[in-house]
Amino acid sequence: MWRNVASNAFSFLVVILFLLGGIIIWGQSTYKAEGPLENAICLQVKPGSNMRRVSQDLAEQGAVSSAAIFRMGADYEEKTSQLKAGSFLVEAGTSMSDIVETVTKGGASTCGTEVVYRIGVNRVSVQVRELDPVSNRFEERAEFVPGTDEVPEVYVETKAQADTRFRIALAEGVTSWQVVNAMQAMDVLEGEAGEVPAEGTLAPDSYEVRPGDGRASVLERMAAAQQARIAEAWEARDPDLPIESPEELLTLASIVEKETGVAAERRQVAAVFVNRLNQGMRLQTDPTVIYGITKGEGVLGRGLRRSELRAETPWNTYVINGLPPTPIANPGRASLMAAAQPDESEFIFFVADGTGGHAFAKTLAEHNENVARWRQIEAERAAAQSEETTSGSGN
Image: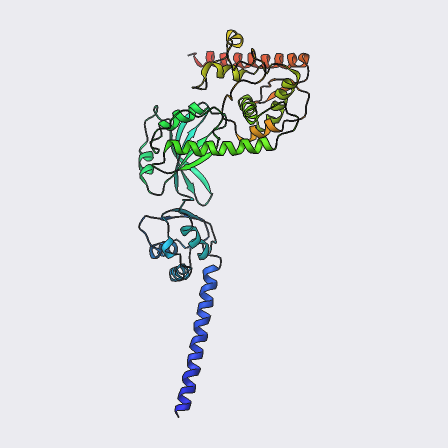
């Protein structure tokens, strides 16, 4: 009798273990399988939250099929204690395993609201925008010019939120003075910036910052990034360039940067200047004249006068031979590579063509024809503008 009871008990235990094993396998499969979420969401994990609250939030939003399996999976992977606060983008169909990885790996928000401090050549602005997780596109909530516009309430509210991301976006062609001047007004940063970095030594890019970051440390990051780009371009340079050092390459790249905003033209523009250097011709480029006037401290805001084209400054390439003594702006990676690897061409002239780009020429006669066409375009535009002004002032 006892033998039968023991046999039955053993059989029952085997069945229980078999069922338990099946449940574990099913749970593991569910934990790693594609999730039920149909549209991407932005998951907010508040400071002080825990994995139970996160799992419940995910279940309510339809991102996980089981809050319990989500928590057990996180426990099994020993990641429960690694939960980070922030706003995290959860794509449609993301598995529980991948969601756990997202909310525990680094703590950097990947969605939600962000504040972008944009440092442009002609304008500094602050933009508050929010990522739409479905379209994966940012929607602007507010934009203002610091020191000029009234600070919107949404900026104050967003800045105070714990999961807000902050970025500084440097446009290609800004000067070091413009960067430092703009950063001094950013209330998210602390400390003094120190001396204005040498012209050209800051990399135009987007930099994520945190409230309380030091201005000097952010500038160091920008400088380190630019130094790496300069080294990369110098290493990849054409061997027959009339350039003797990385500093000269940086100077040439800054001139290319200021001469054209058309990406496809950068290597052509660089080729013109290289051809001129090889032939002993002066570069004769207006941006260097402007830099000699402003020293990079602000925008000239008007056309150049003939007297300024003739005035002697260290940067006026209508007067000096070769390259100016320093860069005239902070060039981006594309301009650095254009200066290092210019097109092979015989062009030694270029002028605006009315489309935002330039017309290139090999001879002075061709160049004069291009200049005449540009003057005609300028005259037609001025006449059209005058006509609009006259018609707009009538009764």
